[in-house]
Amino acid sequence: MKSLGFIPGVAAALGLSAVGALGFIAINTVIDTSTALRLIISAVATAYLLLVLRASTVRTGRVFTVMAWLAATACLWLWWPSLAGYCAAYVVAIWLARSLYLHSSFLAVVGDLVIGILAFTAAILAAAHTGSLFLALWSFFLVQATYVWLPGGHQRSATAHSLDPFNHAYRSAQSALHRIASTTD
Picture 1 (cartoon, rainbow, N blue to C red):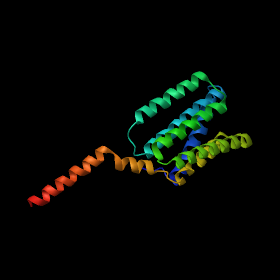
Picture 2: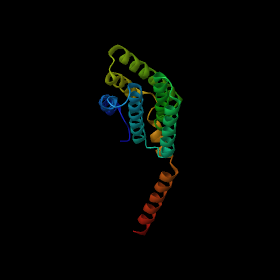
Picture 3: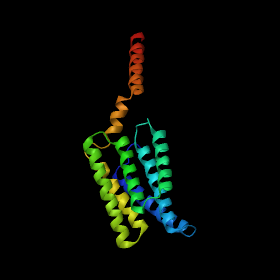
């Protein structure tokens, strides 16, 4: 998958919401609600990060990004902020990951931040009005799926790919071999 796209983003939203809600029901029978919510939020956000990384053609920094994500998750578990602060930290982390891997313009990065804030607000409103984790996650990830419509979005992957030194050298070598082969015939 080179681009997440809106329809695959909606499908991911549905899948993450269903898995998150069902996982919460299963886990909440064993551990307290606050810990279960934090565990599900961590798992669903990490799964979304993996989707973002998979959607990007940018290869550099992926291991570092995952390690930084896991370190930030560990810090959140040790610090144990309020649930709203915990969720906000993941909203910022998702925004940073998408900004680094999928956007090439400042306008797209700022727009993505606005989408993150709107998604967080939609999730809070859905949770407050329905009490449903599924609808809160669904609202969050559905709004997040709209990032593909940002101007200048998804250019980073194409630009980075075309400017990648290895790809440039590879194309140059292929061109040279083609010229050599055509002159010897």
